[in-house]
Length: 120
Image (cartoon, rainbow, N blue to C red; front, side, top):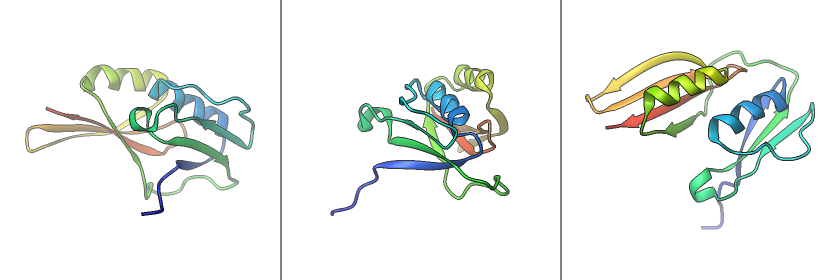
């Protein structure tokens, strides 16, 4: 196969602000050169840190649910939930499936949904 994912792009009203949230949430560094129009978070090791993330300024705001979202994994759902809330995430819902998989759906500071998953 000759195609691979090199990154994930987000539309944003304030790219540097939302990129800083994601950098802190993921324990990664905001790339140099963030501006009012573009910000990025490099993938130091895509196998362990995840893909390159890019944030592009767009004129229109988010109006409906994302068609694509990140699923993040953690061994400590409760502690990471509190950390994400302190960083500015909004808790949208909590779900348990089959009594063994739990996840919380959040919105980042610009309203983009993402899930934090804990499989027991």
